[in-house]
Structure formats: C-alpha cells, structure tokens
Image 1 (cartoon, rainbow, N blue to C red):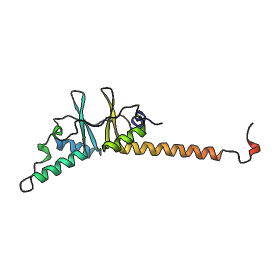
Image 2: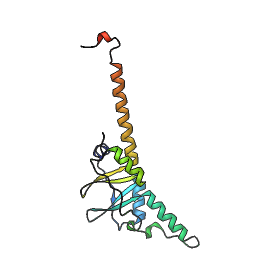
Image 3: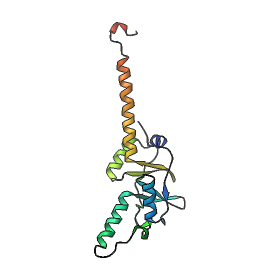
Image 4: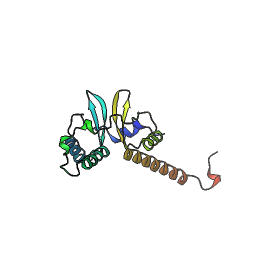
Amino acid sequence: MMKVEEILKVKGNILFTVTPETLLSDAVMTMADDDIGSLVVMSAGRLAGMLTFREVLRVLAKRQREHRTGPTPTMSAIHVSEVMNPKPTLAHPDMTVDELRRIMNDCGERYLPVMNGTDLMGVVSFHDVARAVLEAQTFENKMLKAYIRDWPADPAQQEV
C-alpha cells in the first residue's frame, strides 16, 4: 500500500513558504508565478498555517461585499495572517494514500502539510494523490498484463 512519504519522494522537496506578515498581494504573485495552489505559512521555523487560493478568493469576495458602494481595499493592505487557515488538517508520512484520500474528502482541504512530529516534510495536494493512485494502477495493470501474457497456454507446458 502506497504511503504519503512515497508521494513526497516522487514529488520532490520544493516547498514554497511565506510568513504571517507577508502581504497577500506578494503571496498571490508567488502563487501565480510558480503556478502553485498553496503556500505554507511559517513563523519562527514552525508551521503557522496554510494559504490556498480558496482563502484568497474568500477574502476578496468578503471585502467586495463589504465595500459595494465604496472603494474596495487592495490585496496590498491585507496580510497573510488575516487570511490563512491557522489550523490546517495535517497528514503524516506513514499514512496510507487511502487514509489521505478519506481525510481530504472529509475535511474538504485540497492541500495538506505533511508533518513528522514538529518537522514539516512537505505538502501533498489532491492532484498529487490522484497522480499517485493513477501511476500505481497503471503499474499494477502492466504487471497483470505481463503475467497473463506469459501464462502458458497449454497446461502440459506448466512446470511441475
């Protein structure tokens, strides 16, 4: 059974982080420039929260509703700490992919930080999970086809 640590090995160890004091506008530019859907928020070397495109859209929609008649504050007036999810659901490296999928479906979060104790190992996304499951199924399919192809057609050819 595939585990979260295997997904992280395949994915690589690039991790994009910001601090709670980072301006939301800067965080959004990082997300857009690097084509990523989440940023890990770190404070004093510890996980402080997660910022995803979902939180960004929510704060922008909220600000727009609050200021329908006047000027809407720009993202440069908002800090990441005001928007981030301060208590993201956590995954751990020895969790199976099936457990991870169930947790992601239950909590509705698409990006989970992977923690080994207090150490941040990386972030797994719903996309990473889907890719890992697809690759595992493809490998299993190839192995089964090879097994069937190599199966002797004549029972007399089977080794005793």
